Length: 578
Image (cartoon, rainbow, N blue to C red; front, side, top):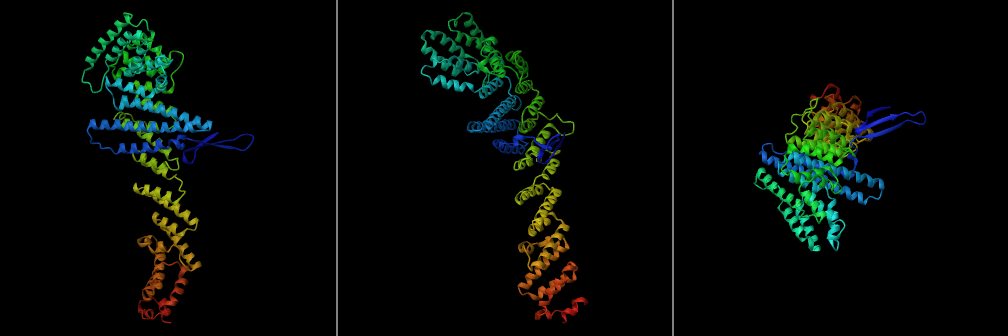
């Protein structure tokens, strides 16, 4: 069994069996490139990428950081939009295999957004202690969306407080730090059960007074910790006094407010993930957690949540690497786990602009950013139309980008002249002279095989290929001898300085000019031009008889007879003296 890379990034594998003919299997890398529903992801992210490369380097650090955060959010919005489109496609798909394929892609895109959002918080925004917890709460609320359906179901019922999911919804709101919504639901319970009004008021007051860091707040972390400690002691006092003893649900909520890990783990099914448990645990036990302390809480939270029953999934490993601030490990794990290079290429580029990858070079000289961009762009070049996006990615790889572009652009199948012109324009803009000549020669040969002499001549002139231009000029002259007229007159009449590319092309252009002068009855000028063609020795030998035949009608013209024969060579002087 042997493998070999074929055209368009395909891995060809030929296997021989004892019985039956040999089989050829085709394995494409970056198979996602060919999914029509992901085209939006590739196209829109390309614009964001190019815009980021062109940003002004002179901007102030604060303005630049704000711009990088906005770029990160733009990438996430593209992922989410694509995920929503894929979700709709999965719903409308009638074929079960197609539905399964779309559903898998929805899961992958959801994981991509989850990872990207966390990297945005920890690396791009680099949220400090205090605001860090708020960002993590937003992160959990955005990506744990099951509660929304439960809320709608509970609130739409005739008696919400009696609904079987009522306390589940309250618990989820508390676990996610959504205190106002939890208090709103608890008020319905107080109205429905007046006997619990006193407990409700106390719990409502505790939830209302809970200190939470805020972005615009000027209080120091020390002040925040003191307020939180006093509030925590008040919660502890009410719990020890048995204030909520008559209501197991309210007592459980009070334990959660105290950061009781066992009480929080009892709601494991409502949280569904260890990282939700981590954020809830931080909210109620260490709200001023510092970024570098996350690794310890993250590891213990995952161990406590998963236990010995289950092992971490690839997504868990990636998120843990992010919480441990192992940036290169995040990229490595994502490269292995995800099905294409889009995610790691764009995330790494963004992190490189954040000056977080400057010290990491690969053994062959290219840095990680460039390596991943080269891989992603190479995959784009295997697609019949997305290759145009790949050009810009290669352009922004300073070390190997041009070499890769030259190699890949030569493999693009030039199916139509329009596509060839597009590729040619790209090469000309980048002064890729060798590729320009190669493309022109290929298209000239195709046109010649199809007997399209005008197109073939045009391409050979663009290639500045004198030998090929001579060959096509001979074909034009042969075609004239057989048919008695020229084809593609517009092209030949407008050769201009291009006719100097070869002697034969010059002869073709001047000979056509002779016919034009003769047709306009400018016989004297026509005769002079014909004489020049005869004496310049640029006409093919096989064409001399044709030139002499063309001279015969001129002999009948009076103005030609008056030419000064002294300027004629001996071989032609006798002809004009007849």
